[in-house]
Image (cartoon, rainbow, N blue to C red; front, side, top):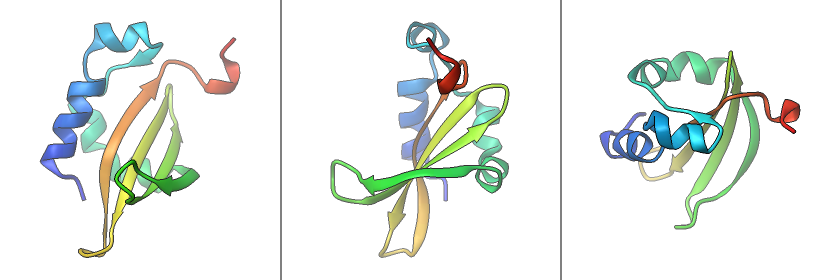
Length: 97
């Protein structure tokens, strides 16, 4: 499930190319949001835990020409998984120096 509030959060925090470049990241695009179903099918779960508000969250890593980190939260009342945030790293973390 993709909630417009979380899409806005993702773009406001990780959608500015200039700001993301300073963090050695790549800005999230509309195409990235559209590709979420494909990304999740091809992702690896790398961590799970709690968000600051105590919601269960799952972190996925997707390797493409960049490394995409996708975090979704478990919405137990609705029995759904929902986008929390996502970002892209310029290079694979294990190749960074």
